[in-house]
Image (cartoon, rainbow, N blue to C red; front, side):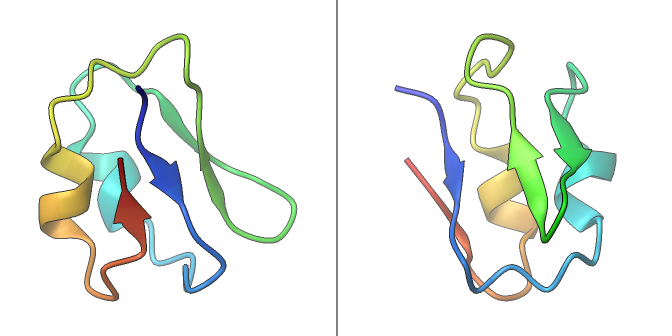
Length: 55
């Protein structure tokens, strides 16, 4: 199951920079993860300063 970004996201972009496949992009109100591209590696969750990313 792909990782998801919660409403606690502050749109800092740290997760997008860390994603090895570019599955994270800036959405209308916060960053979003493309579930079809997500490798479930957890790199984004590990780098998120607000712990807004979970599986």
